[in-house]
Length: 215
Image (cartoon, rainbow, N blue to C red; front, side, top):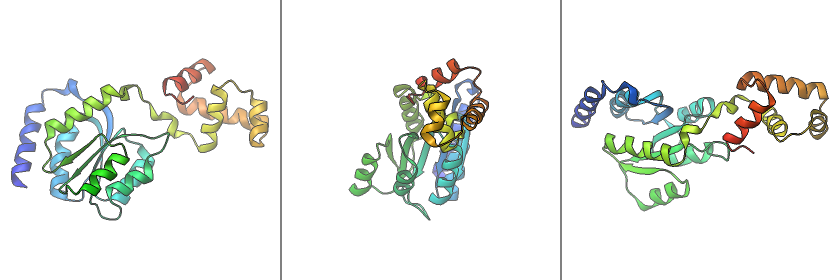
């Protein structure tokens, strides 16, 4: 462990002059070993604009449901909820982050489960930080994650449904009838949506929905 920490701190020192290379994405690092967690966290904070950290699967799930990080690096064997179960609980059609599993184990069953979750990579500890960062950069570039904007996650379930209907060109009266609402209530939802997502016009709303592949 001491060797790992010395290596990571050396990486920190060598990267201090490269602030322009910071990746403007949010990342969650999940690791139950405090020494390993703090050592790698020191490096991740140099590479990423926003870094969250969790020490077990339950804490990680709470952070994910609140912050929706773009990237998740997680140990597989965790207290409370293991990494596989964690990802099964949080991944859905609207939230599909870059996932990298780290573990000291190499059993085939873990590999197969990770493949089923379409994870980006599966790294055996000790972690090669250079390889880790490169894999993340490759994933961001390949899948156009730099274009992703999860601001729509601020919307409630009904606000999101109304947002999609409005972006599809549906009239407020039609939307009201669809959900058993008053037209005035739909107008209120529209105002909330515009405020939360900083839209100034319907064109802004439609453009955003198309760019985020929500339609």
